[in-house]
Length: 166
Image (cartoon, rainbow, N blue to C red):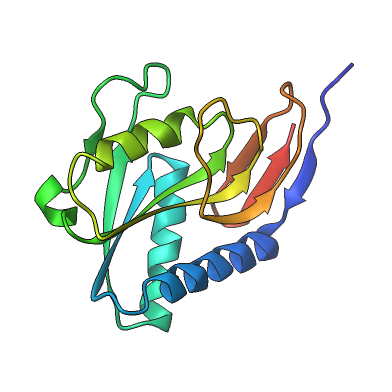
């Protein structure tokens, strides 16, 4: 049986989902002066950049962007961030990734950020696949899908964003 590509989100739908998530983040942090949006490289960071752009348009809250690098084949290796721990300590932080599949990447990202005190810690994903092997959830999500374990969600950010189920 040959795998077929099914578009689950087109460009306009992705833009709408990101905007809705940005508003939810703002509503949750309305009294904060600064929010750190930490995006897991690579697509999670692009997602975080898009959230930052919208949050800056709709609020006066200062948004700090952080790139999080996790070795997805060995996530227990050291997690690297583009800003130091003192830059996000005692702040509200949102950890963003494009797809939540098994939860492995997100849980190791959460573990890293829990090593310093935070005011608030939330997670955001564009697509939640519901195949978690770790007890992690997305606080903000664009869409939830029940898929088979053999299917894959691929998000392509660019001129025409698209989310495909293969």
